[in-house]
Length: 395
Image 1: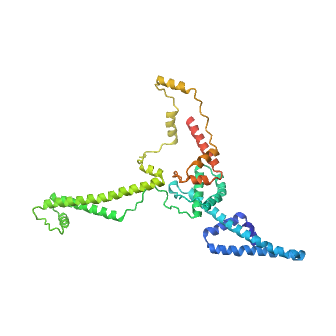
Image 2: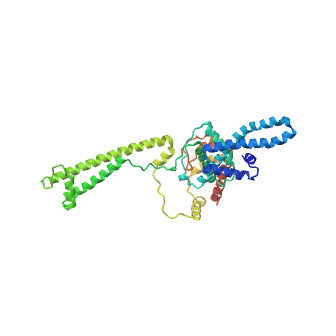
Image 3: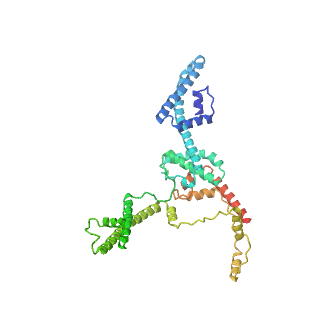
């Protein structure tokens, strides 16, 4: 692209990075639509070739007239190649811009607010996009300082792939709770239950001897259209029958809501079991009760665990412990485990592609697809964490 721009505007001095930034800005701000960009590209590339042909053909007329036809025919083939090269470079720059935006966006987003990555089809086009982004990740991964930043870069790359191929992304985040939308019919039933309970309370008050005007007015409304008068001798029996009728209606309405809730819960759990078993089992666990006291500082935490693991303790050991110790004396100690990039690659290769991800929301498929020197970073971070843990335990 820089070579083509130099041929078009030889009087303007611009670096490759500056030119790429300008192209990225034009594509990002949508100043021109796709048809306009295609028209400008077709007009710009042949004109540069014609100018180069004219300028190169002038000295050949005086010196080598026999080669004029060959000089005029040469740019025709170059036009076709430059046309395809220019289009491919534009696509690569657009992919690079999408990747950069996704990585920056992911770095500033908490884990729980990350969008849920969809399961994409394993087509040739999607694999080609993943392979095209692989070389672009080298710079980001080599500059990664820790495991969290590496995970953020990989998630941003996966997000960029989904945006490039046009996959549908969830904008509500990876929430695990059910939808809060309540059906309208359930709201109406709950309002009926609330009104019936309030009416039962007024009827019980009247039966207990409360004859305030508001209570009396409510009781008359309850018996409206039934030819029941409050002066009848059997009014107490009528009140009891009316209260029992309202209680039975409340029970029937409650059972209707309960049947819907149980059926909806079974349906959601069955769907969740098919798509994400880990989330299902986590939702079935009892909620953990976290402490509300002050958080201990680092010195208190180290002192607490040191008192449990570092202080010698004398136990009343039975004779069977000596037998077990003599039997285990001939066991060869296990060699220290050294994790290599091949070990990580083999473990990732055997992992299922679309099993439910962890807290980071990154599936195994993306770990397999983005192979640009990331395993060394993972292993380095894991070894550093292990060394720090060993130092703390030794202290």
